[in-house]
Image (cartoon, rainbow, N blue to C red; front, side):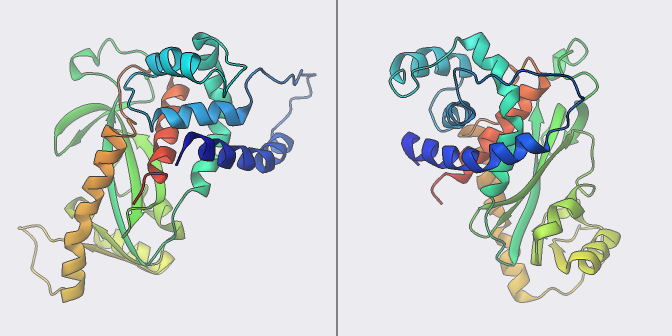
Length: 277
């Protein structure tokens, strides 16, 4: 999707969503000023999302060297970089709603997995303060890390169906019932999701059949041939993780505020939804 098409789509969404969202915000009774800023919400969202579609690895370099110098004609009311970073929390709500609108359609064949989002190097855990009380130590197949987990579900075309962010020490079983609220059919997962109570909960509550490989120390059981073939296609999840981390850049250790970390992750997920399948 081009930058112009992205802005048009985001702006059309904001024209419908923002009035409804502003009426639904809680008020404490105090008088507030609601002056409009130089940049509109749709402009801020477009700039943030387009960063994850560009080849820049650093947002400051992207904003100061690309946006401010080359896109001044498209965004005539640009603000300074510190001011733009201060505006990022204001688009967290619209970005979250816009991401939900970009979810794909469940086809009856879904794949679930999780990936780690480290917020600092393991040697700096004791001195790291930005995510103190939020991030936790966890362990994946690649070893120990400090940060969060992104749990997500995709369909057989690789389209995002649901996602959830948790601390790094949360078991993959915990958010799975929430992720399955819009699913039907069969859900394929790796051996980390093996759980008889979880299988029964998903089947009884949502009618979703959880299918996994078995561990070597478990009793062998018969599996439908088609399910065994479809289980091999679970490798599509690794492709999704590769795009999220290496193209959409949802993981880096330069965050200075937790809310900006969430904005970065959501914008990266939206950018992935616009990737050609």
